[in-house]
Image (tube, rainbow, N blue to C red):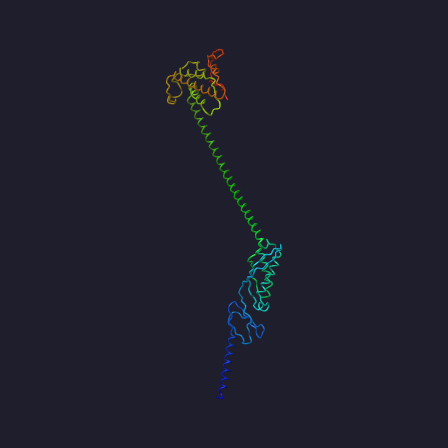
Length: 394
């Protein structure tokens, strides 16, 4: 029984030694994950930095001071009030993207690098914004970001930290200024809309004018071509009629008859503004009578007369007619002449200048006009009778 206390003590000592060995082994083995750096101190002084992997430490001699995340970190700071150069207070919210490049400096050069970055960002932001007015602050975000990044990167370099990006999340001006800015922006949008509308109307009018110009040019060219073709057609028709008359050797008596046929149409045309009185109406009737009665030589007023049936035109070339007796043809011609005279008289009455029948009577050979002495009709000249200038009535 006397040995039992010694054995118990030995067992306790062996147990403590075994426990110490186990604890020492546990503390001596260190597994470092990826993208993490471990700062190891030996006897209170910096010894080394452990990278990712399995590492052995001296128990109770080496101690892990800190573990540093080597990945890029994003820190969003609360909005900070900043005064601009025009004495307006704006609230700016910033975001910092940084990464630890030297774990030893990040642990031993600054106590808390997150707090240090925040305070440095606020002071740098106030210096940058203080040199700008509100409009420049709102429109120069890229410039502000670049200046902040340059200052922070230079200041945090000795801390073993690299600032990759600095972003301004929001720039909030005062509420009173926001209302004015909204009105200004609305007016600017209205101005731009009016300018765009005016430009659209201008382009539309230009295109419309160009189209009308091209249309007018094409229409004028078409009218000119049409007039040219119409004139050419009329010229061909006149040449054909003229050639037919000369080749047919038309009798003057036939031409006189056609002249009498045309008089009613001239008098009844609604487009006429003047009425014409034939100067040799009785002479034309005399020629027509002589033509149908076959008057002798000398009766034709110098024209070479042909006996019946000796016309240069063939019978098939003459237009069809229902008159076969010369006396009937003469009577028909006189009726048409009387109708033309009546139309001319009525036209003169409408225009206020009545038709003077005495002039017509005085022009007839051998017929005395009222108040005039009858004179013998002179011989008709050998040339074709020419009508006197027409008497016009307004």
